[in-house]
Length: 85
Image (cartoon, rainbow, N blue to C red; front, side, top):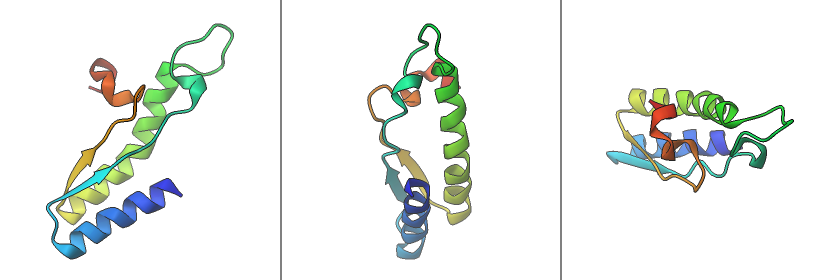
């Protein structure tokens, strides 16, 4: 649902001629904030999931000619520049 809404916001910005679209991706799964003992998920999984979700948004924004602005949620991947780069 969130991905559909984000893509809709990008298309709306394009139709309106807005140069930017700001998205708030939300909060990652609690189990992926940190690496926990005996957990099947970790921070690395958060990075992978962010990439999975972000790629179609980045592509859509590029095709629409709008700049994508990401408003981070605390504990989200964008606060960890080393992993995101």
